[in-house]
Figure (cartoon, rainbow, N blue to C red):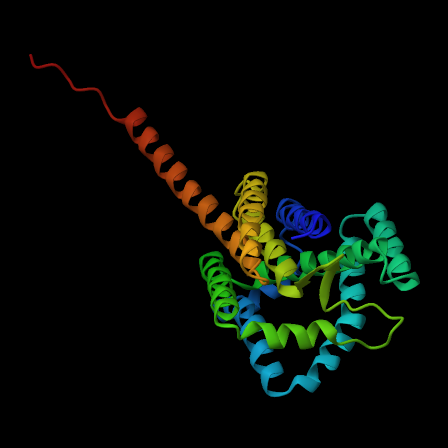
Length: 271
């Protein structure tokens, strides 16, 4: 691993942690509550496995994914920025201008990451509104498990390479994936931390703790690159979610136990 790669991986880990910490819930209109169903918990898993299977069978569809991402990612990022006010909108417009001016430089790559992250924050908050929390948590873990299996089996590599190479033109950005120097990440590696952050926000869990765990797990997982050239970047995020949820369950049980002790009546002495 070169120093440049180590710096790029550390930066991507910080970006994942920042998405966990900065995600919000309740972005969807009230009428979406009528659509709320556990079937949407399959979206994270299908977004990974479905794309891999499709590109393994029809690799020519990679250019279609690139075209859709080029149009939808900036649009979703702008819609998401509108929720946070003028400063967020200005930052998103600036990122769009930078990435269109020079998509291959480091500022252009970071601008593309900003747009992709903004789109993921909106999609994550929307999916949280559509899915019961426990089912969505299971869907997140299932996606990370599938990512691990696909990487370990070598099935992810060919589909990922085809998608990463796809593009609309030499001078237009590739917003279906993240590139930071020599490091490449899939859209799902950015989407999952945004989704986890939105889920924790909806469940009133501490996202700062989850963000710290995400960063720690991600940096530790980077040791995998000493032996392999590919890493399931969704796994550290899912592990952070499991630890935070387990801690929340233990904390809630302890509080109920303490309340039970507090209200327990004192024994009446015998006459």
